[in-house]
Length: 370
Ligand SMILES: Cc1ncc(COP(=O)(O)O)c(C=O)c1O
Image 1 (tube, rainbow, N blue to C red):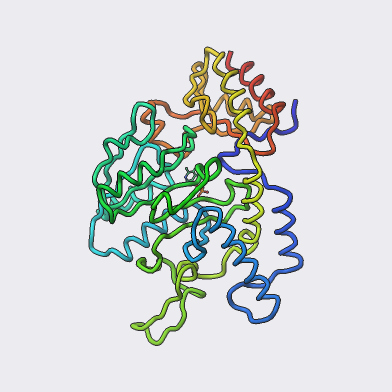
Image 2 (cartoon, rainbow, N blue to C red):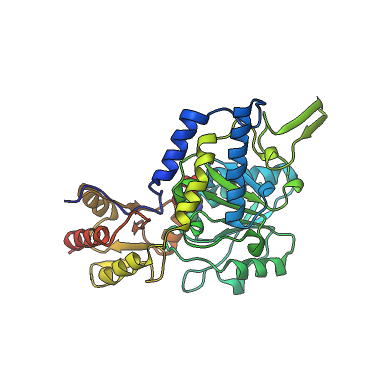
């Protein structure tokens, strides 16, 4: 039996040594707070944070002022709801969602709708389960999941945002790039989105760090208040807030995670995407009658349902063979509902995986589902 085969990259990536070393070095030798101190060491930390912000900005085609650090995609989506509500008061916007959405992207808006704060409309999917650009509804806000965490297919972001802008040039377009970022180049200017979010831990960075791109930070009101985001309080009627990104970064930032982030970006950039492994697995799994594949050969991950056993039983038995993968509803209830299934099994690979790993996974699946 293999010691440990981690094929759950889409849930979270294993960490590169360079990132671990950078974070340990920061904690052991360079630590100070950022944005507050005037000693040389604090200045060095400020420079490291700035470098990390620039590295993220280059990575997604943004300017550094538009890159806000969050604790992850879930945090960003919950914050965006509050940013919109703080800025556009006394309205009930129409929010377009789709069955591709992860709970983290859609639920904050669904909860707002439950309290009467917005109305939800559906963006239909076509027969291939992609957002159908021929029937995009009218709305004020659009949540666009750039890649489903179950189906692993990159959506045609420019086509989608073009159609939306032609319908409503002032629409607020929010992109969930949590999975897309792993497999595709992000270009926020080409996407013409208002917000775009992803999590560091899905590209090899530490947990507790995420990115929220904001196209026009000056038009949005802050959603969190505290140290670092205020320039001066003259009195409570006259508070001068800092400009972005500080305006959206109240309190002490997760410095260690931020300083590691450029190492994750570099690690990701040097990866070939693992398509050879996915294609091999797809071909092998296609030969098994007792499973139903949900993804295609060119998807960035493999999802399937075993026909003769429960997904949780299969997951537990694979786990007992030291195979770490994801089973269940993947925090994506809507797509599972649409496919009329309770859950699925997902295999996803990262730079650490080998052909030997995937052969071991296939062999065990074959033995268990027959
Ligand atoms: C498409 C998608 N959106 C959002 C999230 C939420 O990310 P996090 O848990 O890092 O906030 C995930 C995580 O699985 C995801 O795959």
